Length: 83
Image 1 (cartoon, rainbow, N blue to C red):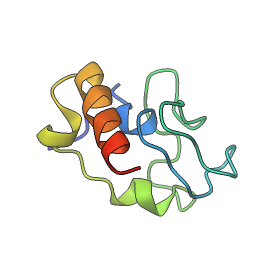
Image 2 (tube, rainbow, N blue to C red; image 1 turned 90 degrees about the vertical axis):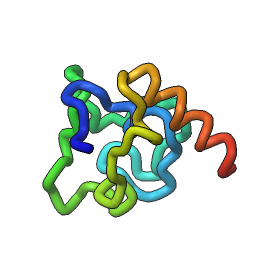
Image 3 (cartoon, one colour; image 1 turned 30 degrees about the horizontal axis):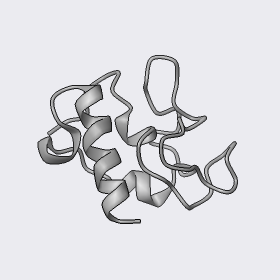
Image 4 (spheres, rainbow, N blue to C red; image 1 turned 120 degrees about the vertical axis):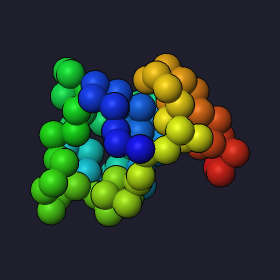
């Protein structure tokens, strides 16, 4: 599955513990990444500065759902289960 343009659920719901430009301590779950643009696109996509965890994430129906809201809900639930 390709990422949905304008989704960004994976840049909001999960915590990221590694360095992100503009967020040197990573980001907490539920906090919008500073690298997520106003149109919900990753500003680091394709760049070496993009965290490995982000580069490794692959969108799928069971993690992203069919809408941004559904994706945020699924990823929030997964985040809570893996704390």
